[in-house]
Image 1: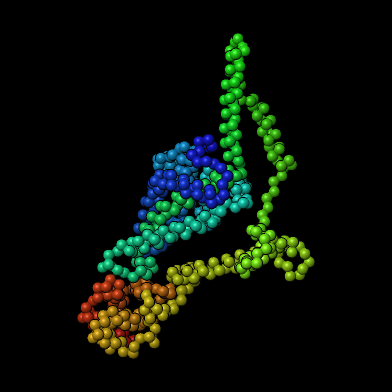
Image 2: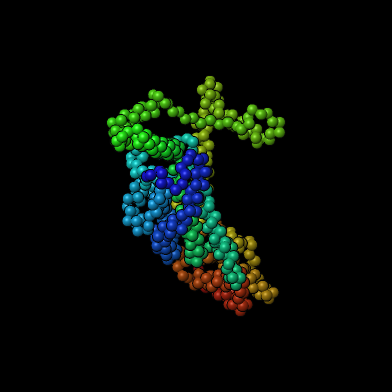
Length: 503
């Protein structure tokens, strides 16, 4: 790595200035890195997406997301060479893949997979080649205070990726012709193959931007931390000064020799002997050691303008001041003999434990809302009260469904008639065939779940035809004919009589 060939100015920056440098790196080499991302991920993502669509499963896409550290390795390899005036071709990236992609990959795909500093830590494996104890020591040095904010950058990138994905889905929804003016909730929450395919494609298009940007920002944070620790800017500055002085001294020596000496001067030795260099390096290491130059780091909190007494401060500002004062003096209070003093470590442990509990609770709620179940957990066949916004409780339905449907048909209310028939059918079938359903399930999800558990019975075939008629009427704004509604009502009555006689 030749620092003098760097295409960016290596200087100590704040973490967010370093992230801004990463955005500039991405903007400069946007097409080469996006092309690299497509070359390594387009075919695997296409195969996994086909597998997910054909099997109606979500695990292939989860596998692609889990392998993100693998897909990011070629991007980091390209950035690390391009920054120092060597732009790798796709052939070179594929040829060198085992050398830069495998080191540390197992750790990043297992216990380090959820590390929020992944983009910052990856160069230690891939570029430095650190292993074992050396790796742990190197990570400890790079993560010393002040913080590099890599975890916060990861949080920002996650939100940016999600916002871009939903924005693309909303754009597609707005471009759909009015003849297919479906419900917005159907496009975002329905789990049919079309909606899953569209959401997956939008997510991949968003990752084509966010993943190269994420790698560039993490790499710039890593370079900034090394610049702070190793003084790269000082090294470059001293090298330039040394070269300038060496050139001036050589020119002056040649001039003096030409004027004073009758014979050409002997060639001056440009470099010092090897033993002299070794002695100088030993002296530098000795003076930089703990005995001569101790280095201590500490962190403290201070409220800005705390010496100024302001009578206009709000209650929130007063509370924050009290909190910072309490945190600053927590260690001294813990060392006193007060019986109710609480150490700051214990307090922060309680806070983080409560935070972790809230996060786990929210994750379980989200998983439950999405319909997923833990492997060892038995699903509860609770009958939902609402399906796709339709109230299917018995007390909300009229006593005589047939009369109510015929009354709606006489009033030319096709939507109301189908709504009553669909609500009554769902209430009856879910009561007779209980299945595990998540809260907020749509009618299509109910139909697929019933077919998975009970096969294709005549009642479920009728429910499929009824749902298709409801979708055309309520969503596509193409109402069916009244005769078709009457035929569906007759089938519903005959199914009810047949099942009653069979029971």
